[in-house]
Length: 241
Length: 248
Image (cartoon, rainbow over all chains, first blue to last red; front, side):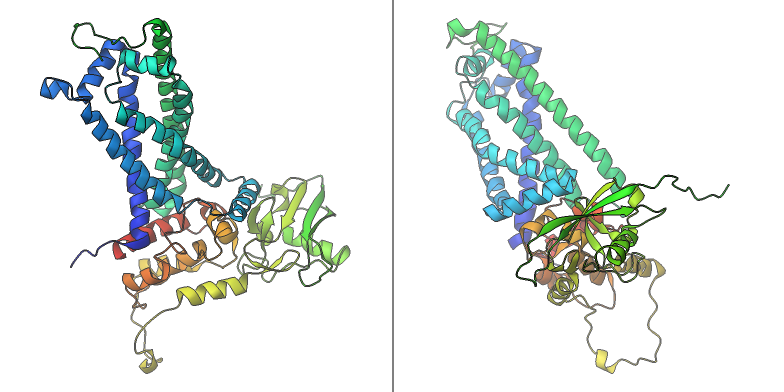
């Protein structure tokens, strides 16, 4: 028996789900690394060096960060073009969906629209963030990031990005499970209820974690505002980032 | 002991109905409110019949069985689709708004032509058993027996009454008129299960393997939450999606 090649609408639907899944896993992982600042500047410095390959190669290669950013950007682009198929395509479709949503008062219908709105926002917010990491991979670190966020006013990008990305990721994962998972009919409602609770728990957790670290970066940036450009050298006094 | 709970004080229900006769050029869609004294165990079917008998004989709505079997009385009840004959007024607020199911051709007031839509869907998806050599079938011979579990599975999916609630509850169907809806996808899974149907997954893929079929579904789950027959629509659609990805 040969495995047939998956193509056409089947491939589009599968790829949309898979790219979404990969992006969500990346974003969730990213949150833990990014929030290492909550453990202190040295913890964040260690994570930064790790991603620049210093722990393996002996010296930092910021290009590694650029490479990851480029890969993520490609995933976002692919996910976006596939997801665009599902967007309402005309004013009439928007109007009908709005009417439907307002009449139904149905959580999953409304959540889909949240996906549309946050997804659309992410075209811009996520692109701006990933592009910056791509072109300035060496500009990440306890002081570099904090200066960018406070003195460079990038918190204005990161705050809405944080909310949009976690709503989109949490709701997306919930929908992904409902879409593909073989849940026995008798357990659908129970599984769904639990997934919903998990979904909101995860969304709240990551937004709280992200907010805490964003505020921390802002605080460090504020205190460091008169020394913008200076790099953090770490407790070990080695090369700063 | 063994007493059916009786509601002591009856309410005066205000039933607001979206009225329109598309065949009358002078008719404009409008909301008309009727007042009905609520009786014990009253369904919307009873309330509407009372309105038609006592207040306005021109009110159009469909009923046949009054028992949730025929699927004629699907309508939008306070924003969500449901069967009027299965909806008890005591579970609704005192003010009730009724509208015809969207996505179907309006006959008048609350009456829509779900039959026309369902027939179109059925012809498009070929929702009947496809089998070779049926002409030579001996109708007097006993059919090969089916496993009871399989028969039960088929029967479960066959319970669909084509009331149209899943289509009216579907955000995708509201935006894209050519989407076959949960009713269509459910029927495909039903015939796919049926051992008498000789169609392969590749053939089913031809029918539902695109954006008007299973890959158009965005898993908003309005169908699952409003199906008056509690059909396992989410499970069936997820199953069909997995099969169709393998077949595609």
